Length: 408
Image (cartoon, rainbow, N blue to C red):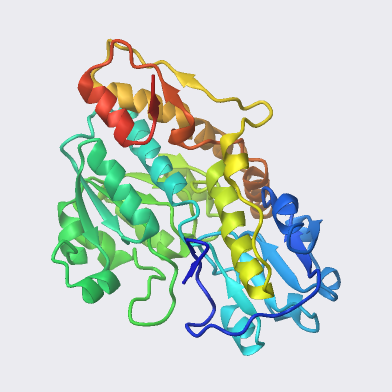
């Protein structure tokens, strides 16, 4: 469905009537950027720390807006007057969607809000591995499993840096009949890098829970790089560990973990790069998540939307002014692009912070995981950065422009 030009996933295919509520009371998790600015134009926003939101907070609320840190279910909402729930995230497995639907509560998510962020993080991961291993990306093959909002952006950016791309997405293959969608076994056998961008589905025609299991890794090209920045439970951790032990997976990059927020110690120790589920945590991605849910809430309550994220996205943030990047003009085109990408998305810093927060105690690991997400440094997307192009080759300038950097 399109609301104000932005796609919003609704709880049912059929659109229900709007709910007329004078100045609705809207409880918002405090990790939503611009929540007060946006929702004060609709009603009365009440900000609460995400993990501290209780049923008592919602007893007289009309709406709840969260990110993925809040479990929204009967225990939280039963007995409240909440009729609208929004999560400003792509995924919605933290919502008990079935219970919400049975209870007549409209719910929305924000598909695509941080797709650019995840795609840029994926490029940074590949460039970081290439820099560590002393190899080039151009000419190699990337297998993209899941070709939705994120997967499409990953493909476009991968092609911009010279990667060959193979796609796998069974639902879209059936719907479109497009032969560019290839069978999973073909993609896995031919790809030097494999990246997952599917939703977590436990049922239906195309379940993805433990999609990456023993059979998956048995089909993988030996020595491949494996990346998961989708949902942790898409990967069967024991199968990934076994594949790494046998050398089928040479390098693993993991932003999401089957047991998060605790995550198993042995998989972190084996992963080349790890992060605390922050691939989609660009400032732009978070603000767009807020905007998408805000517009859906305005539609639901029958109020014209009057807040726009554009002024926030165009502004410098305190301590985070617009940056001018100056890659080395002596480097070749791929090295120039890599330098700019890694300056804009410091994935090595993310990895170091994640490992520095490791604890042998699972409860402490879980607490530290949440803290890393909560305190993640501001990251602006490529389009926020300007690159000094004096002395750069036309190939380097073209690659930077195709990735969205501004050139000077």
